[in-house]
Length: 211
Image (cartoon, rainbow, N blue to C red):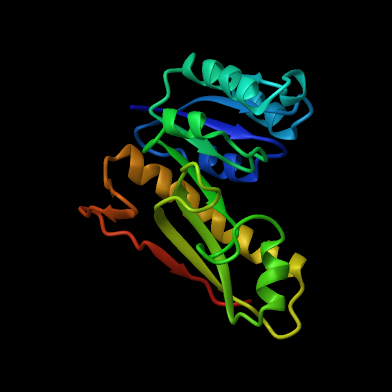
């Protein structure tokens, strides 16, 4: 059984998708937020999951906040840390502490469009497809080794909100699968490359038709 700690900043829809997937061999040890009013905390607590808050506003520097956050995380003996809409830039010291055992999902096909406003930027750039990427977290923002990607066609006349809705539906399938692969020991990290071992074949990419 692998202990998984999930970090959120808001409603944590990807956190909810992971919990509801009821992944074999996965114990959701805790959900931790950096905002006391994060809606996902109540959702997790209602399901008997331990919750905690490490309010970033209570700390004078990123380093101090990250140290407190790491202490809180480590109290749950995590095998894996999962960022699920956790809206903080993490320091190199924090990312190195969990190297090879911290995942994030980003709403673009990395390395394209790291950072914010990904859907708007993809549409403005004339891209034919958009999507999301599950990756291991490193000190460089949105540039860690890629575990899996989901692809969504961009429709004629698409808006960022419409595209975001379709991409989020793919995230809710892709992220639980990646967490499950980690728990099963099927992911091998070699530099910037991640390989997925079989037995049970599972695609590392999803092509989702536009509705």
